Amino acid sequence: MKNGARFFAAIAALATLLGGLSAIAASPSPELVNLERQVSLELAHVRDSGPTDPAQRKQLFEASQMEQKGEAAIESGDYKSAEDSLLKAQAILRQFSE
Image (cartoon, one colour):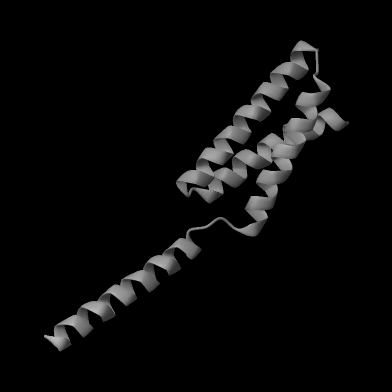
């Protein structure tokens, strides 16, 4: 009986360890997290300036959609797609500072 309990405890400990490792491996890179923060801040800044030109408002809407798509991709674990979407959003937002 003691051997069975030890065996079960060892398996439970191993499962906990492997679960923790997969959670670490599944987290986004620091660079991607930083990119998401930058895009969010740039988007908020452009929204605060409130462009009134219809073409700029359309660009702002597109950037907002790309940012939301990037956030959704991060949540689903699709980090490559998230990076692509966030970079597109950032490129659109940078046009406002030109």
